[in-house]
Image 1 (tube, protein in one colour):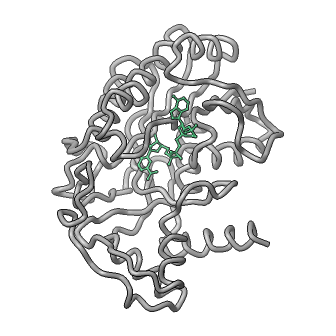
Image 2: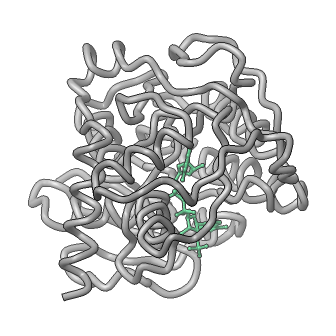
Length: 303
Ligand SMILES: NC(=O)c1ccc[n+]([C@@H]2O[C@H](COP(=O)([O-])OP(=O)(O)OC[C@H]3O[C@@H](n4cnc5c(N)ncnc54)[C@H](OP(=O)(O)O)[C@@H]3O)[C@@H](O)[C@H]2O)c1
């Protein structure tokens, strides 16, 4: 039986991967995270505490399970926090990735690194896999450094790049752009939304499915794994408003400069999915389907 180890299993992607792998009879899942297991589903897999910045712990857990594949989704994902604390960002996104890669040096392991559109400067999206990276933030640079370490040091590797992931985590501890927009619109809350940042928002289940395709096919190389619709963040909110029949009158368009966030954002990203579609059979949901799925999950969780 194949052993798949997932890092960051308490996170959004990690929880979705756990949901899928826990039910698969042909894969033994080792879910790993920082501290206790916060996923309410506790059966169908093994959970190990693994802080990926702790090199000894990484070597111990990987040495114990000798995984056939690692899906490395754990990261410091708050872009502004990375900008404000570059040391922590370097440690969690680069050094930690090095720890994992070094730990599989003597194991025949397929390494899947989850990366981001923020490795690009956003001047010419949507991007293909072989477009030239040029990060504009410390987070983007750290993920690119992680990618490069993986490419230079793993025998068998894949990079799954994704964009603005939205989804529901089990304890609803994490904000979600679709539900945030719906709540704000329904409560007629005045919100400022940027209209000069374009993304292809990705349903967390689609990202997990893309990682699974890569793992299952033992695919190697870089793959774009995002949603298929590119839109501005303002348009995203507009689509949520249309879907729920809500007014957008309380939403003000602003530009990124006025928002004045610590980290610079790439203006236009989004991905060309032709390669992942042709080579992996990756076919994500439309954004409207994603809204429906999230809302169904939300209402089920509330009832
Ligand atoms: N979310 C997006 O919009 C987006 C966009 C592009 C790319 N990505 C990439 O996609 C991947 C998954 O993102 P996500 O949305 O699932 O992020 P997430 O919900 O923030 O999950 C990240 C997980 O990593 C864990 N982690 C951080 N440092 C760790 C450490 N030292 N040891 C062990 N675990 C650690 C976190 O643990 P705690 O729960 O304990 O904090 C968290 O559970 C990341 O690699 C990210 O860079 C995400």
